[in-house]
Image (cartoon, rainbow, N blue to C red; front, side, top):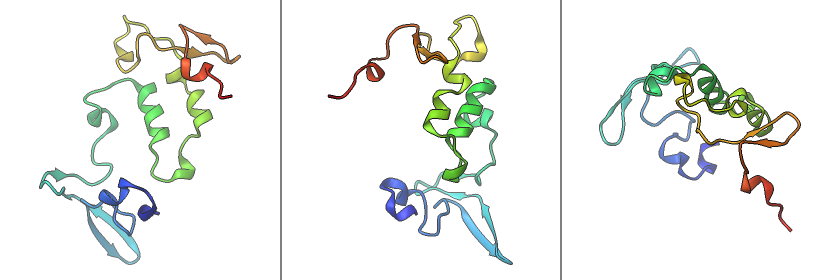
Length: 130
């Protein structure tokens, strides 16, 4: 529910629709249209831009797949944190010569299938709480 989420009330209406959208309900079908933000900036309806356009011409299909899994509108459809940690985008090693990996951090650590790290240390994962 939008009213239970901190800043969400700034972006999501009490009915669960993006605040900037025009909402049309006809025959129990909801249609979201373009609208304007509080700052009067034009905003297209959800889904009006491709992921590549929204990410400024990113053509890294594995990265886009990772984001799509994390940002599903319906929580039950999203990937779980453990699924996210096993995703190919987080598991692959960065190759500085590969332009398709523009969103991969060059020094990023990779957790292998056995759970060990390659490429350095991940201090936040190595520290255990007492």
